[in-house]
Length: 250
Image 1 (cartoon, rainbow, N blue to C red):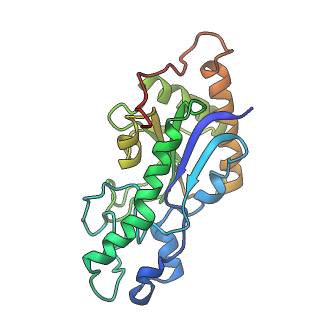
Image 2 (cartoon, rainbow, N blue to C red):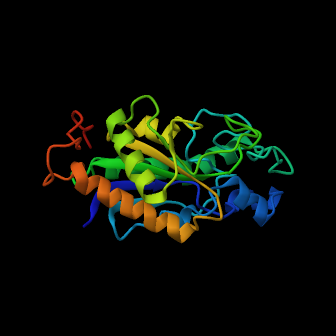
C-alpha cells in the first residue's frame, strides 16, 4: 500500500554549500549536532509514500523551516547554531545570502507546493528529530523532551487527526506522544497548509529505540492510522476530506 503522503525532511543534510565553505568554522560534528541527526534513516519511507522531499545542505547554513525574512542568528541563514556556536569567520555579505536562498531555499518550497497540488497527495508530514534535552535557543532550554512530539501549528490539520495518530504511535512505541509541546509546528507546515493539510513530527534522538526501530515503528503506525479510518475503503472514522479547494497550479 502506497500512503498518499508527502514527506518533507528539511534538516537531514550534512553538506556545506560551496558559497560559504571558505569561511565556515563548524566541524562535521557541530554540523550534525545542529541538524536532525538520524532523520535520513528514520524517515527513509520513499517506497511507502507518494513523495519525499529532502536536501543535502545542512541546516546550519540554510534552514528550510524558517520564513525568508527571518534574520535572527538562528534564522534562515544563520550566524550561530542552535547551540549558540559561531558559524562563520566573517559576516556573510547580502549577495551571498541571496545566492543561498535562490539556490537552496526557494526550490525546496517550490517543490513542496508542486507536489502538494497533486491529487495523489492527501497529507504533508514535516519530519524532524530533536535533542533529548532542549538546547539554548529552543522553546524549552534544559528540559527533557518526550520520545515523540506531533504538531499542527494553528490548525494546519484537524486536531482529531493529530490525536488519532498520537494514539497509533503510543500503541506502537509504548510511550506517551506529546501534542504541540515543545514544538507547535514550524514554517513549513504553516506556510504550505494553504495547499494541503500538514502535520509536523519530531523523534527524540535517543539510543533506544534505535533509528531503524523508529523507522519501522513509524511506518507501522502510519499504515494502521490510514487503514483504520483514513482510507477511503475503511469504515467512516475520522478521514481525509478535501479540506477545501487546493490552490490553482497556474
